Length: 261
Image (cartoon, rainbow, N blue to C red; front, side, top):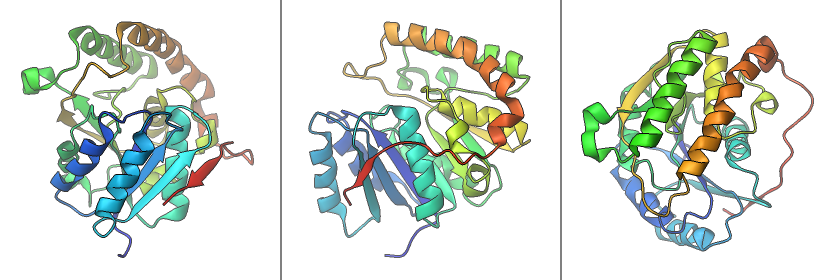
């Protein structure tokens, strides 16, 4: 099969309760795409389920599977994926769909109107007013995110609808301008990329989405509080770095991955 215009990147770690169903639900997406899965050194049966999916669907999709040699965290996984997208593919659009099942695969269809447009970023924005109970984000987390969005827009003098969505679409021409080694190593990497979009006066759009939460998900109140205080200082880090975030260096990201498929 020939390379396709769109690449769906799926970061995953210990998602054995959700990953196979998420991958099966990719059939609900109504445009062509290739798949990149980055397993961040899972220790459950996650990898076996991914390989089962690949075996089941190998004649339908172009699939690449990378396994990290150790658990690097979401930020490094995303840097690995962006580097792979830019250097190893000819795709023009990168779509991020997390492997934990919190984003319904069929939501990817919301990006279809933007595939041929010139927006550098299209962000998902969770919207309880529109989706009601379909959005399962706990109220505590939902309003923390709203507060952080307001805070970051004020500090960074921006007007983004959501800084914290992991459901996002990027254009190649935009990502090629970003020195990956300068990005944060915290889970707020997409917020860091949004700030760079501001520096570059990049066009950013948003689509309304909902999130699904299950008991096995790791996002408890303790995690949210820790995340909250991490994000409090990050806008100041972005501002202090400012244009230096755009300077390419010889230093590269250090990681070890095994290409399994």
